[in-house]
Length: 164
Image 1 (cartoon, helix red, strand yellow):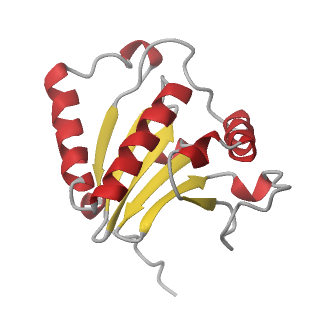
Image 2 (image 1 turned 60 degrees about the vertical axis):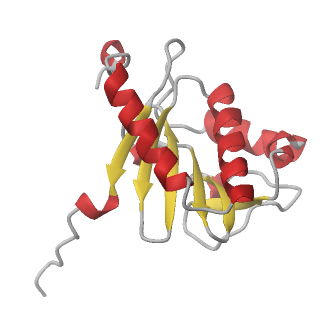
Image 3 (image 1 turned 45 degrees about the vertical axis):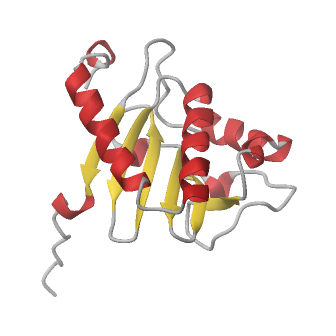
């Protein structure tokens, strides 16, 4: 979708996507729901033109904050589950992390566990967020507003293995 088409999501589509996301969030304990909502508000303020690309899995969901409708271009992601809320940094391995906040052994992404909304405002976390946004291969639009895009993980086709 081109930047000029970015604001073409109808009010009905927007309400439908928000309703789907609200249903996913409602499955969790009240404390987790409040933290997810507060984290979304904080991230929407920080990245007002970002798409929130939502993926639902059996026991959790992920919201990728992306400059396009493609979640894989996202720079940050919220993961909500019954075990809590994590903020993922998709370029986590490249980030300078003097406070040693980032967790995870993956090849690229790292995360922090959000204990509360105040975690996002900590200077070390803000620095990580700023750095990961700066590393984005695809720039975020400078004007407009983002919207929620629902991507069903179940609709994805499994990868086919190449014959040996």
